[in-house]
Image (tube, rainbow over all chains, first blue to last red; front, top):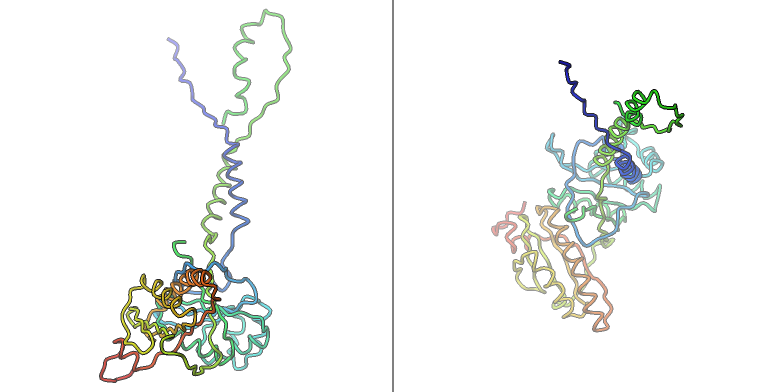
Amino acid sequence: MPKIKKRRLGISIDMTPLVDITFLLLTFFMFTAKFKTEAESQQKFVIERPKSTADTSKIPDKDLAIIKIAIDTVAMDTSYYYEMVNPKDWQQVLASVKDLPEEMRTAVQLKVGLGLLEKLIRQTRIVNPRTRFAIDADRRIEYHWIEQLMDVMRRQHATVFNFVTDREGG
Amino acid sequence: MGAADFGAGGKQPRQKRGSLAPKRKKKKRIGFRIDMTPLVDITFLLLTFFMLATRLSQPQVMEMSIPPEVTEVEVKESELLTLYIRGDGKIFYALGQQEPREIPLSQLQPLVVRENVRTESRLITALKVSPKAPYGRVIDVLDELNLAEIEITAQLAAKNIERKRRFALVPISDEERIKIGDLPANGNAQ
């Protein structure tokens, strides 16, 4: 008796619409993607920003100096960190601050104390007076960190600044 | 995958059977299929990568300005609202020289709106924060004040009064910290 050959089932689905949609989404995400900055990928902490609802203004993407106050969860210490968005200004500011250790001159983000921070803010205001300041602080830190920072900024006449927040529920 | 010869599959038996019949030359249809599976694989891989790597919620900013120097400004007692934030995050308020009273965060907005409308925008709001209060709480309060601003402007516009915002972050004194229970009353300031 001849063996009945089992028919192999071969399904082929038309994948063209799937590819269409996938490419559409891919291009959308490629164009809207904003990646982490160099400083952000180097830092060892995560800032839990406070949430706010009222404001709709977005963070400016140039002429910006960011003062971060973050809790390093590994070393368990809180400190100020300073970085600037314009690389050219940042180089000038770093060059103008004397008595800076050599390895700090190439960093994109500096871990600073209040004394150095005051020097950096002063130089920033000299190099680029249009620079705006943003305070990006963890919501769990105690308020005296902010208070001391505001004293420093008041002394340097940087009296307008921004608190960086996240949108509520976003 | 056998997708490429899919179109010719149906004709084969007919040609064999009909060998006696006059040969008809049929034009071969040019239909080809490309196996798209690897393409889809790679595209989905890239898609997931970009979806995960992108940050959808951009951080926003809340603008603040501080007075250049700490200056004493004389204010009418009835037109001063002081808000305190204690070290544990509790909020207190005092009108003029009143004793500070506790207020939940949700009640803050109606209070600020009411007082601002009562004084016809002459109210000065001072925020005094304990050095030990969590920063997130400060932002919560500032956020409530910003939200109240919309209501205040609307209510004052109905009365034809221009809104001028008067707000200050003021350092807290030890006496005030004792009053709201942030420091023990025996005066051991830290």
